[in-house]
Image 1 (cartoon, rainbow, N blue to C red):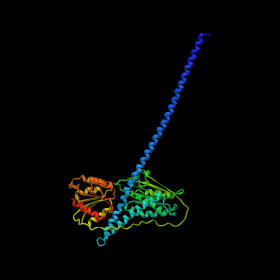
Image 2: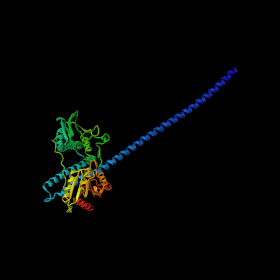
Image 3: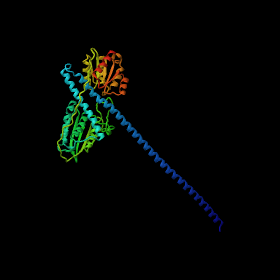
Image 4: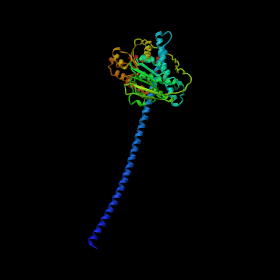
Length: 447
């Protein structure tokens, strides 16, 4: 055998062994890389799942905090909204005494009591309705509902308010739209809530349009306005309980934030749906209610619910003589402002009234009151801001005038905030006339 050939075969065998060894090594390394890749993929998946879990927890915590803030704002707002009409009712009830009140004052006082009793009755009714809805105890008196008639009654009930505000109502009703099956009183409540909401947020010279028509197997009710509109951030929350686009004390429009939540629940109890549309703030809004058409026939509709208020009698102690004392009253609520004015004038006080904080600051240096009585929750400039501005004035321009916060914000933190802003005394509504007169007498003696 050729030695060269033998040597060549041995070299080839060695090379084959080396290659086999390298292949095995590469195979082992590839296996290790695959294991590392699988482990990394698993770690990445675990990390992604952990991040997603943290994001969900963060979102849930944020949502829980938002709901907590909304509830706190609602409770403070509830106290304010209930106390404000009660203050006017109790105050005027004590002022209207036979032989001591002129016919004009008697008529004015009774009208204010009636108006505020209706406001408070509606607030209580909204709270009771929401409680029934949440607990599942709301019952419907189901019968045939003539929607055109329901809309007519609802429009009649808000026409006076719309006219007084200078808002034009346009009604377009298809007389054959319907009927539906449901509770006529509750459906009138739905339409009334939507209409009053539209009028409240529509400025003078604006328009509210009500359209009722048939849409396939449904009746469609749309109420649109040319008012302030709804911001994109608030639109998803517009039907939530206690929600308000502006929960601050400077908001121009009062309320509990329950009306639209009640509308949504009542509509859904009737098998329908409701939605809100708005292209943004300042561009108006539209609320659309869809209700299924019914073929049911039953009894005639009944009249809507009525509200009554229980009389409250509190003794008004004899008032001190405050002749010569000058008091400036600041409140955006005309009923409350006039009540305080009449009360103090009966004690000989000279009273100047201001409907805003800006007006008070403008008149203060010229009128030189002995005492300032101011509300807290006012639009544009609230009582806190007004008082801080007032305390920054020099004494000769009224910066040191004793000041009383007369407000429906009655929590301990509200009292503390009023003191820090510069008020001397915090008096919560409703206030007994005797107490307010005593506070004014004490404040006036400090000047």
